[in-house]
Length: 101
Image 1 (cartoon, rainbow, N blue to C red):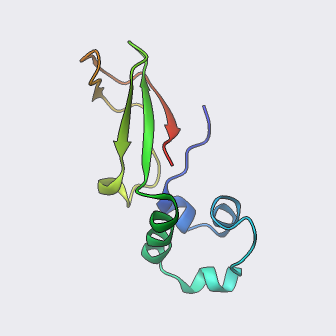
Image 2: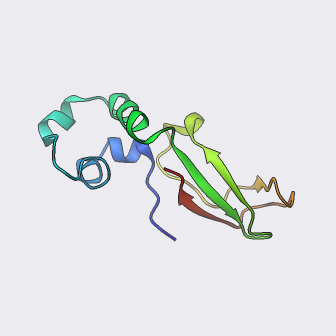
Image 3: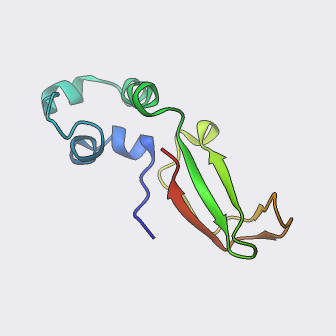
């Protein structure tokens, strides 16, 4: 599984920002440091859309999307949470996760 990063993680780390948001080095580290985390999250939302993750159910291989607007302050994504699959209705924690952005 790929290493999943949230907008909040990227917005608080210069190296992640340079890798995922600004690979062309248009922004300096000093400019990055002057922006608030919320300003950087707003910029990423404007560029890439609302943060979301594509989840694949381990029971039926059906897919669903998890919209992270309500989790913007989360430090990371925990794959072990119980979520009801909209396809097979199984409640479980066996999900494969990839970025929807």
